[in-house]
Length: 119
Image (cartoon, rainbow, N blue to C red):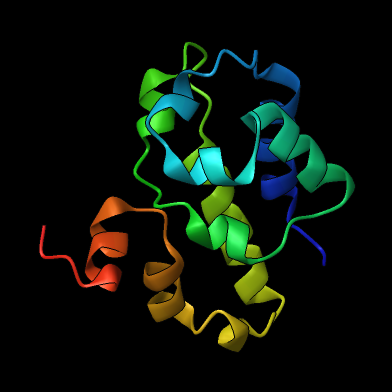
C-alpha cells in the first residue's frame, strides 16, 4: 500500500512527538482496543502498515487532539489513511463501507444499538 506524503508526515509527527502520556487513551475505546499508546500505533503504521479496519474504526471526533498536551491530530492522520485506501482502490467490501464502520465501531452509541439495547 502506498500512502501519500501527507499521511506519512502526519504519522511521523505523531510517532516522533507523542510523549505517551495516556490522556488520549482515557476516554477513547478505539485507542484502548488497538494500541498501548498512539506513538506505538503510528510507529507500527510506518514500519508495518495497519489493517484497513483500524483507521476506519476511529470516530474522528477529535477528542484526542483536545486532551493532548501537544495537540497531536490523530483523527486527521486516520482520515488521511482512509483517503489513501480509497485512492488506492483497496476493496472496502470486506469492511462493508460505512455500515461495517458503524457496526464494528467502538463507539458506545453504535455498540449499544448493535446489542439491541435502547440505552
